[in-house]
Amino acid sequence: MSSRLPLLNLPDEVIEALRQGQIEYTKAQAIARLKDTQARQALLFEAIQENLSLKEILERIRLQRKPQEKPQSLKTLFKETSNRLQKAKFWDNPEKQQVLEKLLKQMEALLAEE
Image (cartoon, rainbow, N blue to C red):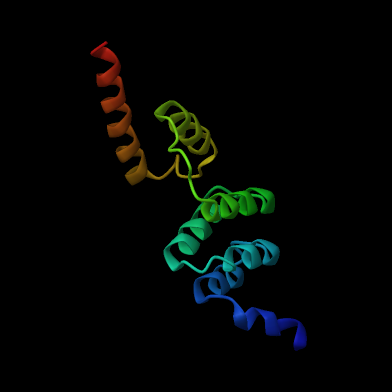
């Protein structure tokens, strides 16, 4: 019973993800350290959707805590977003496909203007 006591200290959404087998305990512990509820929920969603490793989760937490001295360039932001898109698990979701298709068409239109 004492081995389950640490679970009581985790936020509800993290406990629920654990119960459903969506995330491992070590990852849940790391995510639970985020005090900001919105940031924690967003990271939990990303960790589940993108099957992030513990190392990737810890890196994202570190980046959230680190004050941003300089905003990312659009080129860097695009590259990072593109990498995340390739790993995402929503490719078979028709609703998200429609949104992505619309965004891709907008990007193609921008390229056509050059």
